[in-house]
Image 1 (tube, each protein chain N blue to C red):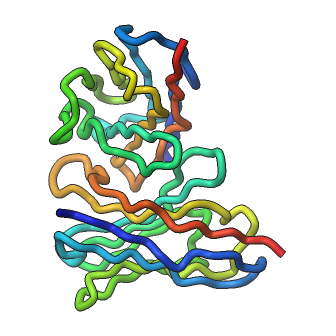
Image 2 (cartoon, rainbow over the protein chains, first blue to last red):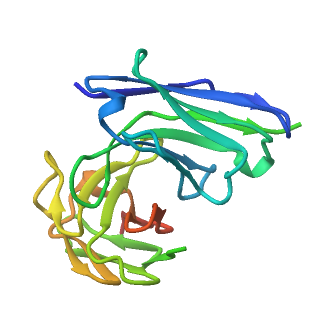
Length: 119
Length: 106
């Protein structure tokens, strides 16, 4: 059974950093592209970052230069290092697995980890 | 960047109603369009991918159509468990979600 479990969220001051983790089971993160998607309180979904199987990474303009996506194949875990945090980065951060095939949808999602940026 | 719009932003419907949600892209995305359902306090769930392909395990009352810039999600007969927010997503050039359509009980 495919499962994604995020952790690492919390309350952080503006300018601070966190490392979010997403532990995967039932498949290998190295064999699928993986993404992070966030949702501000009461708002819609915003794609944040992706790492492809070959290791290439891409970011939304709103986080480029501040966030870094990575994975540890030996731990079957996806990470998102979030730095220089701003109030507008507050939200629930989901990791999601890419479905192999057409149109690159996200077929499995974790339950999310909450990041709150506040002084 | 590709922008996505959805209409309506919300709708009220009754059990058994046929519901249609529209999604429009700011440029052609061919069929790189996916639909998700999100219930309060839950993660999004993939319903439709590549504009019209039904994700495994999803009820056949959900269907998708369209290509280019205009797409629709149709629920043929609304069930109580379908009251939720629906998002479209383009995956043609990175990823962008639409603003969502909230479906609630009339």
